[in-house]
Structures are given as structure tokens and as C-alpha cells.
Image (cartoon, rainbow, N blue to C red; front, side, top):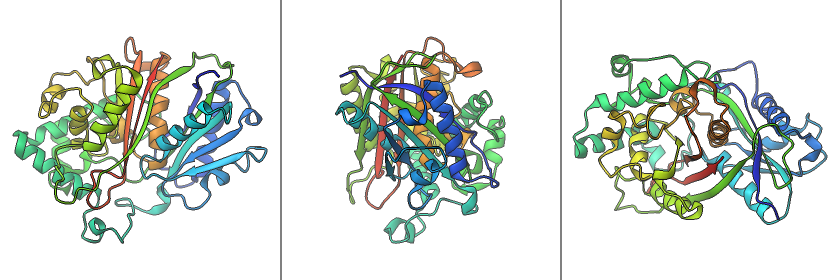
Length: 378
């Protein structure tokens, strides 16, 4: 059996589109991915939909007007890791020989939910006490800054870098350039995280991928999947180290082993920068540097677009926004376009191997509920 390849990608604009719904955004991404792959809807044998906040049967609702033939539709909710988890499951089915061509898509439409933080399960201990994501990451930032001697300016520089990248990405529809001073002066959300250090909370978007073991009909060279890992967080009520992204470190180790590569082999990374502190923590968890060296790596320019290991060349969640069901798939779309040398003004030079990392959810006593890491190669 042939190894599954990514043969087509598609993505909608990311922004605020209250006049649309998530089905319309998903349909645009799906049709774009099918066109990119050179296949039609009837060539697809199964559909995998990642969605976090859209309610029941999101995949069927998105597909009902696109002329499907009654094929299987799998709906996956794994919080912000939903789309990446859907991709992982689709790969498993292809490798098992269950299907030859499948389509993975992720979507969410947050405009319809109003403003503010994402709605969380009120039965969870954290959320009942106000420990929603901005507050949790503010605590992590405070602890990291205290232990590492890191000033607030370092966190602001993450936002400056990623929004600079996002200005080169046409789907990041509301991205604008910012200075360190603007980031620090923006409204405080949860000390020390200001508004411009948090990913936009009301964003709509969708992304899609065609995967197949059949010969590609598309014009772009297919992308290989070297590793696909999904892990869940450990329950450690009395031993949580807020400066250690344990689940990401563990998932990265498994992914590197599976792919037969190390952090030094990567050309670029798309990671879950929902808050500025996240990027510094994940530099260290992914093995780009030693613990405590994330600020130095950032300051060196290594993770900028023209640096040694560009991180979030797309602009990341800080610049694009974060419709949770779509994010993991959108990261893979970005890696594919980079590896295929068609990323336009944000193209990473000599991109050969890319890694995506997305975490999902927060529940009491664990680092994160889920983490998905994928390693792709040209």
C-alpha cells in the first residue's frame, strides 16, 4: 500500500464574518482543497471534521450542499486540537487501507457567540473559580518571568514578531503591525498579558486537506507525513510546574522518534501561540533551546521569518486568530504551502521539514487536555 500524502490544501479567510456561518466557510475551504488536489467530491471516500463550538453534526451540515454520496462523516471535538486530531485519525484509516482518499476539514464561527473568552465547561473546578485560559496563562507567565528573570518586554516581542509575519499572510484579514510599546500599552487582560498578547477571541475560519494513497492529480508536489502524534495531559494535582509544557515535550519526543529527525532538522514550525508566553514555553518543550533559553532564542532573531528556525511564519494565532476547530488544519495548510514553495512573501527559504503543534483545552489538574504534533516533509 502507498503511504498517504497530502495532495490538496484549502483555507478560508480568517476574520470576523457575522454575515456568514461556519458551513459557508468550510465549503469554501473544501472546494479549494479539492481543486488543489485535482479531484472531485465523489472521489472522496470519507470526511473528517474538526469542530469545537459548532454544536451537533457540524460535518454533515457543512457537506450537505456539496453533492456527497452518503460517505462516512466523522466529527471530532478535541477542543483547540480538534482539527489536528481529525487529521491524525484520517491518517490511521488510510494507513489501515480502509480508504484511499479522504478529506479533513476544521471550522468554527465565533462571531455568533458574542465577545469575550471562549465558553468553557462550568462544571470544571478551574472555570468555576475564574481560571479561564487568559488567567491560567497569565499565571504561567508570572511564574516564568519570576524564575527566569524575564521582563515584560520579552513577551511583547513575541506579539510584534508574529504580527509582522501575519502582515504577509493574505488570510489574516485583521492583522496590523504593532510596536513593543503598543503591545505593552494595550488594555490589560490578565496581568502581565495585555490585549495584544492574546489571540483574538472572536474569529471565524475554516481549512481543509485532501489526503490520498492514490497518485496525485494536483499540480503541486504532494507533502509527506513523517509523524503524527496525539497525546493527553497527565493528572498531577500536586506537581504541576507552570513553566514546563510537559504534554508538548512528551508529544514532541514521540514525534521526533517516529519521524527519525530532531529539532535541529526542522525548517519551520507552526505552534499554538494563543498567548505570548505560550511561544516561549513551546520553544523549550519542542527542543529548540534549553529550559530558560526561550527569551534568548527570540532575541537572537532565530525564530523570525529570515532566521534559523522560523516560528509562526503564518502569523500564528496572535495574527490570524484562533477558530479552534480550524487551527490545527490551518497550521498544516501553512506547512504544506511552505514546503511546496508557494507561500508568497512569507516563504521560508529552503523549507524541507516542518512541524505543527497545537494544544487543546484546559481542565483541572493537567497541563492541557490534548496535544497534537505533526511533522511534514517536502
